[in-house]
Length: 556
Image (tube, rainbow, N blue to C red; front, side, top):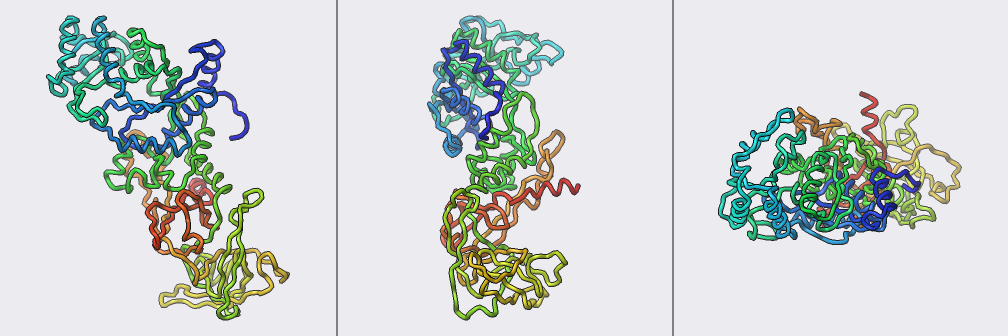
């Protein structure tokens, strides 16, 4: 958005820090994804916030992969995350990994043991959970809580050396078992995982927990403003406790409301279910809220950044209407998408008085919304054309301004035609429409004096290319499919994908490019899919020209 907006609460904090000389006025943020899946639109909000703050205050943003769980993490996800960030238009100062700090984090853990702030616990996960108490009842000490510093140091070294099996021992911080904050009741710092790590292989068999790795990694990098979502508010005292006890750089955590979007789910676990259970074709299915899915569907980086800017940064959770995201892409593509004609449900129109064998080139604008124009294109025209079935009616009502017996309409960028007759097939469906044309009515040169209210699009039969058209819609048919007590899979929209195997398109579209937006006149915005091969083009509908769902809501 171009107009100056008021500062959000994080910007206010940063400006106060700069004014007070905190961190010497320096701003360093970080985006710390776990490489266990693909980024989605919720991550885009965090990305835009972190990188946007750094840009606004002449700072920098690190990309740090939180790779502390070798069971779920893969290099494939690392590469997809980097691709998504660059596509969105952001470049990071440093590419870092929590695994870069494994030795340093181990040293921090040893330091806490030496200070009496950590101990090795042999209890099972179930026993630890039971001893932690409840929010209204204090926890009870583990029988291993008072081990000596020397014993804890030896046991922790043995854990690292691989002497114990998964789950046999953990390292815990010794804090306060009576704290009302459950995260301070002797939280886990390290667990044993005999799994190959995507970067360190089998060098390590103990891995730090998120709460221990996160703040310390921020501190190592001297991150000035560590920005998380609201669910990490209860974690902040632990974040601060570790930094205080270790006496390291005082990074600080700030929290904002995560993005919740209507008619979708944002949980990685649920998105993975959709992929694994075959409800979608993969992480980049154009119905998915993943960045790769949105990109494949035809969303632009600008539309996503604009969406994130419009929703702003708040301290309270709410659900953002997906219509706003769709508005942003419509607004962007209206200004940039090339106009082309495509007939999805064809019937043949034959111009009976057009000279036999004649062909001519009509002229169409690439995008009339571009100031100063965006170039022109040639449209081959002949006596036989494909038009949309919905543009003809055998018995048209009074205010039908397209074609029917005796009715006239303009062919987009071409001539005015008058319907003289039609022929049905053996099933009673209209097969061919016969028209005459007005030679003096050519677009741009019209001297006929005839005014018609309707304009329809067309494609020359002889010159048309063909394509598969995938009409994508919202994946879910209810606003909040992921709410408590619901099986989100029961609310999948059965009409979220409709495939038209053979549509007719302008011959110019045979040279369509992946990543460029096209407006199929009167049909919506479309983009070329990666499944396309020469002779077999596939186009995805990015979004309809208007919000069809708003009408459904008003009806209900």
